[in-house]
Length: 352
Image (cartoon, rainbow, N blue to C red; front, side, top):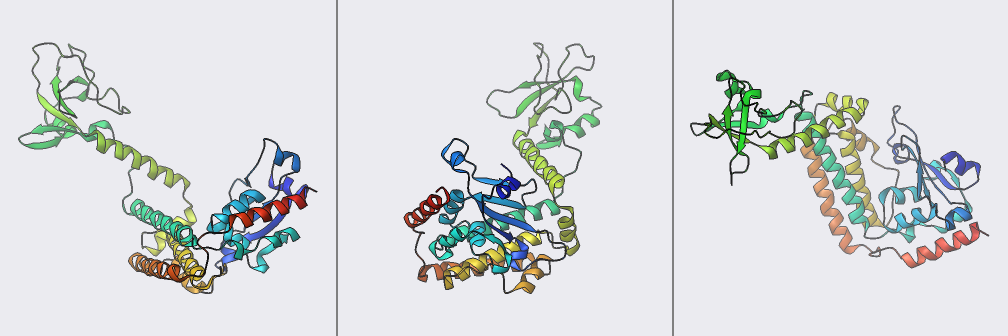
């Protein structure tokens, strides 16, 4: 099923503009995000092909099946609560049955964890972004040899340096493991290529050192340490970095480069926004999607605030959220039984 089929078959229950335009934080460069709610045809709902969610390829249009929508409301999912509390001017279509779902049915103290918890994931993203910008990883991938060291005179010497100094080639080296010494190997050298050693690594793309069969009586010329843990970590970070480079939004990346603060300013804007919304929910019992502090939030988005100042602001908001949660008149959790009754009533009406 596609979004077009939902609309063509009159299965749409709710549709609205979401994201920056709903928050009042849009700029001329902002896209239009759409979200909605639909219901499945009766036969499909009772059959084996339940579809909880449909979205387009870019994920800027997302539609939730009615049951999944209510389930996420009961979990106080921030995106879904914001959808139900959409400003009137952002609502494109609303089926009369959707009036049965009121935001007051679902707001609860769980918002402390869902909104603030999601905000903390944004902080982690911003920190991860900062790390990638400040510590870029060279495109040319390191090899196993870059993590091998020769033990010499109480020091460790990079194996590449040691090979060059001794006019050796790694292909003529042979390694033999040393019992009870993880990562340590005896290194033998066959200058005449008589024994067909496998080298320190069989090929440049190898992911581990290679062992060779060493003839009896041969003398080791050195002892090698292979830092496998460091190599494994490097491979993980290399993949994460270059996947990020490939997938990043170049316009957003350029904005972050231009402000020179080395953090993802859009993520930090959403962090502060989410924390401010959580504070209002617990203090006032209301969810205000459209933000009254547009200038402040857009100031964060363009990078006009220092990263440490934003973290201090987030910490202060977290303290307020904790305080308001202890005195809030909101229920601890939403009334799931009531929500389920309303859901059944809506489905009964839809499937008459």
